[in-house]
View 1 (cartoon, rainbow, N blue to C red):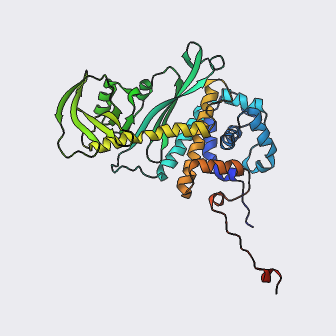
View 2: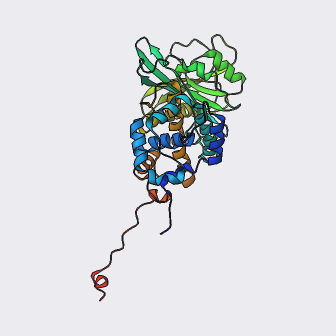
View 3: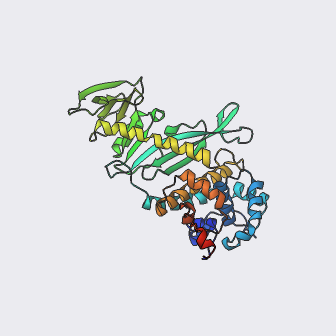
Length: 376
């Protein structure tokens, strides 16, 4: 029987160790570690994400019980106080840099979006994470309530989080959106929470196309209707001007046959069909599914520390875990969903088995007849 390292060991090979050590050296504050290291911290928190551990004690006890299977990873025993101190003091920017490197690897092998145009498509949204204000005083939301807001820009190629930020709950989405640097010619899809006509004009001047819902109280100056045969569901396709800004924009009214709901879209993309405009906005549902998935399957609602640095450290490693699953799925061409992959990994992360064999269907048993069993 061929020797296999643990499934966890095969997973962390995705991160070249020399690159990790270079990042650890760059993003280090305070005195030099004696026995603990950023590698210990990373393996511990990544394992916690993959196995569903909820507390520092749970993490350290779990790793201690599996210590005989971790020696080849270079992970030494450590206390929960040491792990907590590293989460509080060591800059989370290291895992942000690690995330960006893994994101580039995922994007190189991600499946392409279902739309015909070659330009990038980004889906923009934010989601609230409820926090206790007395424990997380930096996460201000209301007078007696705390919350953080996770801002994500999802790359439609593989549905990968290309832009990530965490702010106080009261921070408006448009402030974060203005900081984003989208490639020229790319498409951005967002909901009515990002309505800002000045930003619309900035995107247009930068050569970025957008699709958004038009608010019901929007003041527009109607222009000429676009010629051509309308696709099913398209009730209106008309050029408009938005109050207070220059330029020609486009209004598309679309009736969804499945829900019988009429939508009004605004876009600066004048060279695509009205049906494509509606399909682009429908694609925005994927980022809602992304938020739902990470909240249900990763540990980003309960945190191992109370400082912003500890919270960001946990979130960046959770997103690294998501990219790990995505990368393995893209590379191995596994037919399972990412949720199925995660469930299987939870049960086998410390087993010495080939990673790909975990997801293969069980081999059929070969039954011998009675004559063969009796050697007659």
